Length: 330
Ligand code: SAM
Image (cartoon, rainbow, N blue to C red; front, top):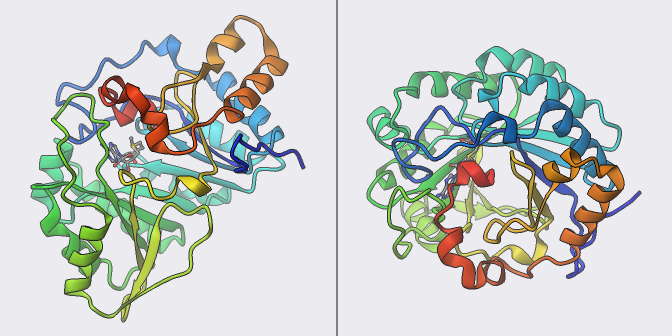
């Protein structure tokens, strides 16, 4: 089996592939109310380009792809890509990260394609809090789809970004509400990629503060073993069906085992969330340079990765932090 190994000896087998920068929510920690400057449609990777790049990367040793965005289901032809990728020999896991507003009509087909893992973003269990954060009235749809996905047997992981002054009061209630659900609630540290929607000051809710807060309400919890490449530290509360996890996405304690590569919806290759794009695959394809050049570009990118998110951030922090997660591909 071919393998992508970076310059620090880490195997890169996990691709996060963004299919659009557009989103139908306006989460205030991700972008301003008016949105960002979304790119022109012809600058997004086309369906053929997405399929082609997916195939090349799987040929190079990627065996896990997570589709992200923007909101993946905002792209009308998304299921064509899911059908294609799910049939690729060598790809062991295909998953999607979604805000669950538009997934409803596709749940049956996702199941039929054998897709098991869904990451669902939900930063509140209280309707008002949800509407204030997302600036949209979609709580019932999201909650309904969450329960449906769990009942249909998907491995659902809820992503809950802990936001100072906005949703701290929902941390314990969401764990209570999910007590009897087979689901993992993952609490993430906020990151500074908000497209200029707000000033990012020191982080109050880091991974330690989140755990202390949960432990004070649920003292009977145990840490679970996690895969080496997992970004979350996972726990089980006595009497709860599911689990919870904490992701130090800003503290970046997990870089040593990072196995990820990102390709944005415009074809940028990003080897660390906190770094700049290192190449553009769309331009290579559109100038007719073909598969060999793409493979070589990937190899070069993987061969010159920063060791940690802090190193990647380097002196570029200011410009990188003007970016929005909807363009980076979360
Ligand atoms: N639209 C999809 C969704 O909502 O899950 C996929 C794209 S979204 C950009 C991916 C993830 O990035 C979501 O879980 C979202 O909460 C997270 N995210 C966006 N901005 C963030 C920020 N500033 N800090 C931490 N996570 C962020």
